[in-house]
Image (cartoon, rainbow, N blue to C red):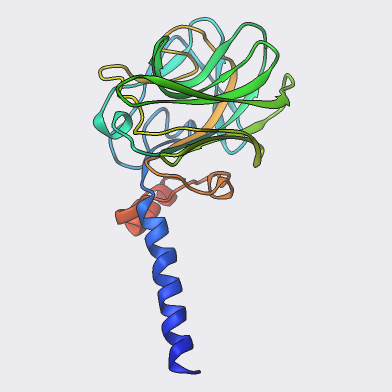
Length: 242
């Protein structure tokens, strides 16, 4: 093989490795019965249960079913989930009731936003990121109207320039943005509600948060582990618990 081709292959492999290393998995909550609401990355972003969500059969393993009124999980605030210049967020969800606007997973409260998923009254999915000190809301609304009892993969990303929303791997909407995510200091990242309000009624499985954009295809793996600098050790630890 010519030396020039060998050099080219080495550079290509190096760029692929660096791309994966730049996207660190900040938090991963499988909601399997054995794992509870622990953060399986080992980063310590363990959840706190509010209400009495049920453990049910999930998309992969087990999932948590929220009653739409009192149930949710709160992950305490931390710079790793607040101070983000870019991010990716994914989950599998199964709505069991639709109606008024509800939050599936969100960091922030009304008018003090950061990022999150919510379902519109017509059953379509929205993903938003609020940016900069000005708390500038950038929100993408999808076209897929969700049906009761069906599993959906939802994914949102922000690379510092564009907010994108996906349902089942298909791009549903995108809008331009600028600046880092707005910092909602002191507010938890909540799954199943917006900080104890606007509760989601249905099941949630395999929630994952990255501090960089990744491809939507990567996020659909039931073990969405791309933990950057600790790839080998984190992957091994999570696989050992499964």
